[in-house]
Amino acid sequence: MSLINVVTNNSITPVILCGGSGTRLWPLSRESYPKQFWALSNKSDKTLLQQTCQRIQGIKKLESPFLICNEEHRFIVAEQMRQINLKESTIFLEPIARNTAPAITIAALKAKGSNKDPLLLVLSADHIIADNKSFLEAIEAGRSAADSGRLVTFGICPTSPETGYGYIEACANTNNALTSSTIKRFVEKPDKETAQKFITDARFTWNSGIFLFKASTILEELENLAPEILRSCKKALEQNSKDLDFQRLDKKAFTKCPNLSIDVAIMEKTKLGTVIPLNAGWNDIGSWDALWKDSTKDINGNVLQGKVISKNNSNCYLRSENRLIVGLGVKDLVVVETDDAVLIADRSKSQDIKSIVRKLKEDNNISGRSHTKVYRPWGYYTSLINHNSWQVKKIQVNPGASLSLQMHHHRSEHWVVVKGTALVENDSKKELLEENQSTYIPLGCKHRLTNPGKIPLELIEIQSGSYIGEDDIVRFDDNYGRTN
Image (cartoon, rainbow, N blue to C red; front, side):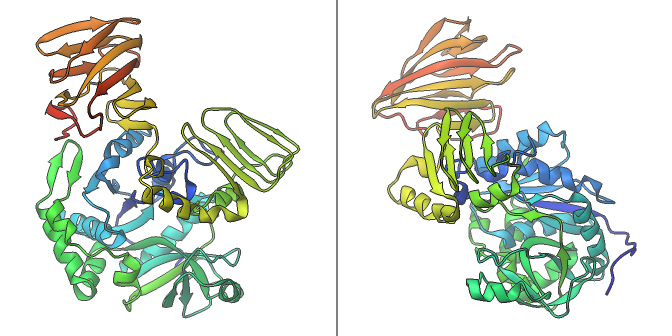
């Protein structure tokens, strides 16, 4: 059935899923700062999340988006929305990761609770779409089916026999990218031989995880097929709390929610599934090899980013975040440098990085989870030197921002200002420090650091004590709603 030139009255509310850790792009992508918050492609200076928000602006009757993220990333999401002037978004905070079905349920309940019944456009925050025009045309083509009560998903027209993607089999041939078909079945990641058969059959597309359906339709299917998810999410939303500009879901209720994807919970069971092929240069950037394929290359097939010198190399991905990388006479390699780790891998083996990250976590190696640079709502800090009883950090505080009023049970601190101006509250005493001036914060002292200036404040912090963990903070007052 052709879906071109069909007019519907329903508005579209984007639901952008910002979870996921992107471990196959380690050491750049980690739990503390995953791939959706990075500007990965050398074709754009915007992050994957920002690109996702910007590409949907051409959709007709577009409502403000819902963004659903881990509470640890809330200030990263808010700051990236501020950078692209998207101020009307609603950000939901998941207290614990619970896959896509609960996240979509929360969005549907919230949308329907406003006495409207919009179409929900579900998008992952970490996809790349090269052909935005074709993407928008496909979304418009899906309106009619979604408006009539179908659960529409967009299947990616396959270009190779990928074994890392799930597949969708349509009941009919869907060569026409603006033609829908009822879904026959979903197929989990196949072996190479099966994938080779799939790409020769026009009924098969890759499962993109992009959906379009009415809020009421998905809620009815949840009631029928996954009532426990619907029940838990209703309680989590009813008992949610306002946290600055965020909607914090109730932890006790949300934790009881089954940890299921929308595919498993609904799409594989429903009789309302419809697929529309999407041929728009889609890439989920699931590995360094996938990023290499998507990036602009030099005449020798190399992708070079950062401080890189390349001579007689071919088909390599060389990326430096800090230090100089020199590549000489190598081919088909991935080399990624960060301040605490260097990855060197055969490009064809880059999917296996996930097992390396798993091993780092098993060994309790912090590099498997976090960067030495840690973002906070007031700015960021970078760990320079670590020891059991002392460490050195570089702290940057944004203009006008403040750390919480706090104290520590186990450590004292020295602060040395290297750039800008610092307003230091030390018990009841306040002092203004300029460059090259310092102060001492004794153990147990109630203190706060503020940047009253117009430029970023940079200082060196030296911590010493019997315990220097980040959880040794007692907060008395905080501008960002953080509690102990």
